[in-house]
Length: 76
Image (cartoon, rainbow, N blue to C red):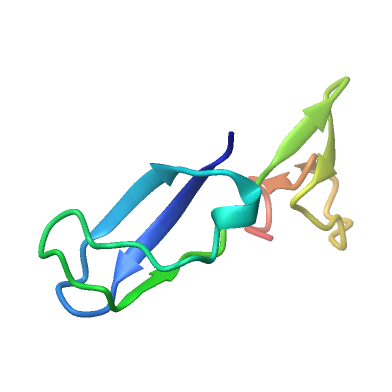
C-alpha cells in the first residue's frame, strides 16, 4: 500500500499514513490535534533508470551540466 502525506489545516502538523489507493482522499484525523480539517499533500517523485531521469523533471536547459534534472551549472 502507498504512503500518503497529509497536512492538518488547523495545527499545521504534517504526517504520513499508509492507506489503500481507494482510501487516499477519505477523511482522516490529525495525529497531533485530532482535527478533521486535513488535506492530502501533492507528492512529487524523481525516478532514474540507467542514469537518466525518467520522471519528475524536465530537461529544458542546455547549459551542458544538466544531467537527469540536476543542474549544478545554471540552477535549473
